[in-house]
Amino acid sequence: MDTKTANTLLKPGGVILDLHASPVKFLRSFLGNKLKLVFCTPSVQILNRIAQTAVEGNLQLPVGQTVSLEEAIPLIT
Image (cartoon, rainbow, N blue to C red; front, top):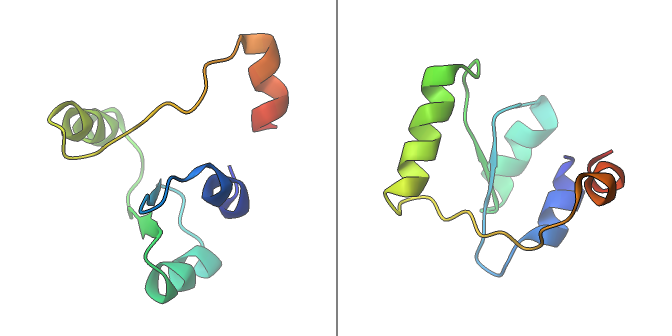
């Protein structure tokens, strides 16, 4: 998902956790407080740790909308 789309989905005070850093995203992370970059090669261990952080309540992941698979595809492509 691009940053512009992610920003439209954020609640006030929310942040974007991004595993796919780019030079532009790197600069945005310094210039604003909505984008937090995680520099890593996504692996099962790293993704499990992020999930565990959410389970512990230290990473809030609210669900804004639940849709069927057919409805989801146009939303993410």
